[in-house]
View 1: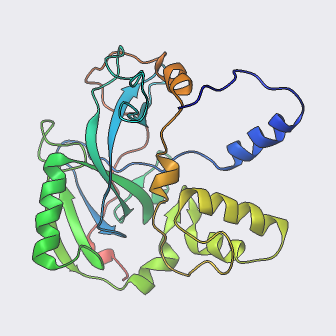
View 2 (view 1 turned 90 degrees about the vertical axis):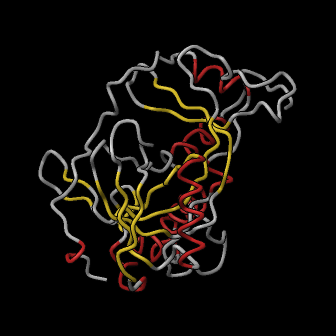
Length: 264
């Protein structure tokens, strides 16, 4: 990787920084508490696989970054860094969290577009399920996590039934916003349409021009997980805290839910 300057001159940087901020935060990641069971739908079943580091900063949130040891002559600054986990082989797929969660104010959040970051053991289980069914798509699945020793994405995947993807599409949300409404806006002609399309192009595999297809989109893995420059990664992990067993923060309580409630 070529070295980059730590400063720049002129006013253009402020506009570029605002454009970067407008692209928003990375996708939410699927995970389960020990003993939990949730239901999900796969939007793709060909995982995007990388070597990935994970760590927790002083903000008490988990962070991830692609390991750059294979593409940076000086190695990856995250390798062996304090509080940063060794790189794991992770296969990412796009899923809909059908069950969702109930926020502290009682609001239910269902049908969320999320990343499922499966590590090697669970990837092998997904491969077998796909071989048995022919595809993971168009199906409602139940995913459970037996105990705290099981992968935090879950370790027991059971098929429930086929679903109607066309009926699911208008229900899907991404970061609290209805994905169909966002695609409708992106297909417009005004400035809001341009901003919305730029956001969607960054997060999902959709065309930069022409009509955006009216289907549930797949995450733009290559953009969202692009390797960072060594200096930027070094700065990000400088605040890493030692691992502990406190778990993750945030709203994670499951909704009262039955697969009979699914309207598709």
